[in-house]
Image 1 (cartoon, rainbow, N blue to C red):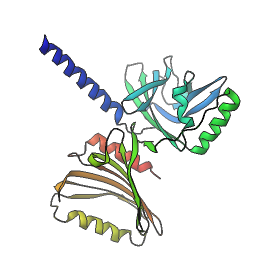
Image 2: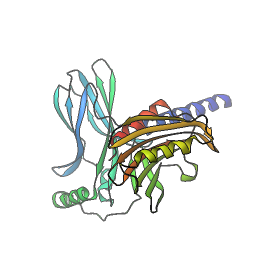
Image 3: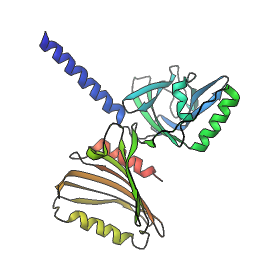
Image 4: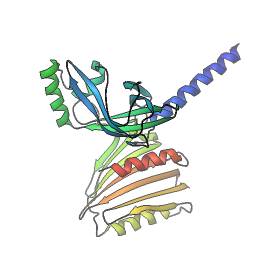
Length: 300
């Protein structure tokens, strides 16, 4: 009997772990063969605030769409449509939002949210859209004014730590600094520590690296990584006059465990901005690499 309970407990923990991973790392994807997301945001409708999802449906055989807000392992259904969905423009609204669902409007600063939409057709086949959305403080100021005027809702604003929901997970600043050469911000997924990171997202403003000396900078990066590191693999994914996309990995060098970094460097005449994902827990999983690449391609 005790052995059976242990097996059940282990199975439960395994399921919880699997479920967390499924919804914790999502690749932003605004379009597939069935549907394309056009917009997602809050609307004031009558006496309530609701989410509204507008999309272009490309096929005639869809049976349902369910939209969820994702925060790491938390997945909250917000939008649902189970009647037949036809080809053309689609507009779906949620039920009226409860207070906890719109409190982000009263958080000072920019807000970064993430939604996933599960779509099913009449053959029980499924596809997803993963939609990150961002709201500036100015946009939220307007929302607050409209909510006060139309819904008679007025709340005090609150300060929260800066974060970005890049892939269904909130990433918080773990380290930052500035000197004569660069500005650096390092972000880590919620629930992890900067001292023991496995994944990290870096934003670098390189103050002295412009179009004229980018090649010299890149050669120095490669040479530095290659020193005493026979397992280094360095690959340029794409390159143009305005940017370079590259990655490197090794099996463990100079006291570092097996690591991978993928960077996109956008170059101007006098300075550059570099966006980087780093991973140091063995070989970078293929699915996670695709997520990193998709996010980096859209960074500005």
